[in-house]
Image 1 (cartoon, rainbow, N blue to C red):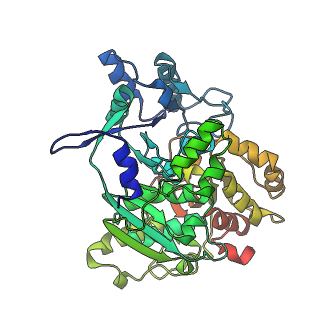
Image 2: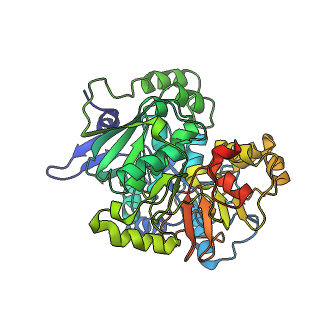
Image 3: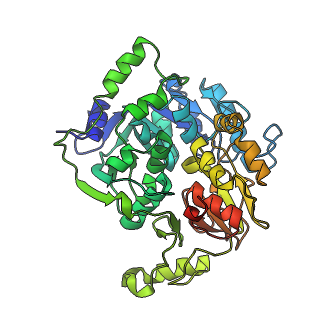
Length: 464
């Protein structure tokens, strides 16, 4: 029996090149301001137009500031990239949601919330975290600029078919344990290369019990353990989330779509190239201590001793700790925090703000901690306001900024200064990722909120 990945992949095969790649049909191409200029230039040079422009959506989000978006962008490089995307979309007749458009935001937040990303689709974007859309029951993956041009021109891409892996998380998650903790735990066991060459299907009772927003967080981080992508079979949770959204099927088309979507699952005798099972009760709130997302541990644990690290990895292990200012055997709990960042395509959704607010309610932001709370889209910002979370957070000393990638990556104004320690809900803790010399501890929105109100890395369960 085929896996779900096989079913979706095989349904999109146009042809298989002998001794070569597969020509795969793509249902949706998302374009942003950083990886598209050369693709558009290539199309222009060849004098061709996109084959199916209605299946392409463009929006800026990496370079956009998270304040004063109604004014021109001050940074000349960022301004040029954002303006160039708008001009290219207009010239080539593509849908474009620019800054201040109510439909703008990070595409990995906007795609699902607008019903643009649907079960059974193939979805690509020149952005590694395209794996996020796999939570909808889609095969979604990041591509390079030359491949963006290929998809624009032909609505197809040449790809080698990856191997299949199923990661099951069985049991019930404990108090204060979120989808972000599940992802960081899996990466701590798999390492950042443990899923290289695979497409991962997440399964098991703990995954099934995640909300859609939790599933989006889990799939978002697939790329961080080397996977080509990650996805979850659609179910009633998926259908309930999609129903009524702007681009979701309506009426009889909805009924037909759901009937098809219900067939999108791996059979009981499906064979995967690799199967891994984790126990939900083994997972606690997680933090990272190094400079890749796989260097994670339970928040009350200690950084591994050097002797426990394989000989071949000891030099890089110590280099990571030296950069972070930590030592083997250290506890992170209690360490002073300079910045807290809530947001990104990993944790910039309404549930993330609800979680943060649940800890902040009735408390005050710790003095001396700079906090950036950045929704992943204008829709999320409106939800925050509709639910009164903005007032609750303002009373605690926090401010809600405008949508964008913000401090996830140093491509806009929101950079963490050198040497400062940030607890961040984003996806990467590489050296300089959040600003030259910035030190990043990845964590969940609950753990970020606990740090924001105490001023030190704190187990959120002590405040719940």
